[in-house]
Length: 293
Image (cartoon, rainbow, N blue to C red; front, side, top):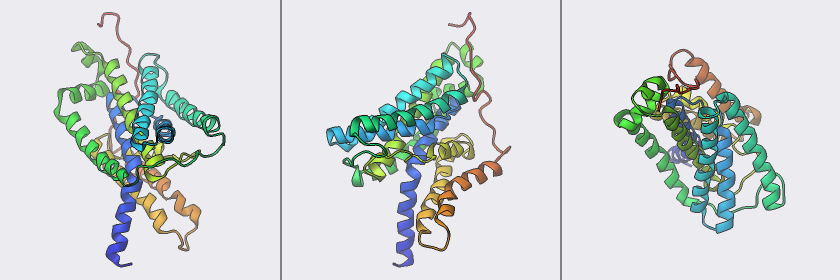
């Protein structure tokens, strides 16, 4: 293969490996700009991946599977939103619980639906249609950037992450905005999971998300809580995921290659420690005063 061919193949692989991380990172950015830490991205991706396979297999229409993945991710996002805004559970604890619940539920439902543990049966995949989701990931990054910096709704969402009391003083419910933001973020993470299961593959297997939700969370921080920054960080981490496949067959141990994306995430977080400021109210529960609304 020529050098141009090798570069082209790597670019294709880079796009494939970046897309699920990008969707989850964009979803995480949306939630965190509203003031909710989304540790549950891993679980939302798991829910989206599993729901997409079930719907695609049941209907024979993979795009309905992608829609099911979005709905499942949104449902888990809404659950986190309710726990964080209405019940006021610690957001880290709530997100961790969602991750465990999603992984356990998928493992149980695999046996219930397919009669076998570990992995589902193969289902119709998106095939070449998955490239539409690759393009969509970049389009969503641009659209979210415009939304956050150039629209009144985006300004209100950002204000909820900085000073929710000021938002409430303007007669707007910051809890509702946070709930909607985390739900929308969950939908994006669910789409990332669906891309993995019926875009890149054609089945669901236990543990297939493999920490990508946490890498996406690192991309949110590495990208300085901005959509374009998160997309750039997703490309950075996607590069190392793609690199491990390129290096297969080399003298480097396979275990070391599998570590590459996670090592890159840790190094990036350490390198940017203290250089980026999270939204001031990120992770801080907001409780309305009796006089409000």
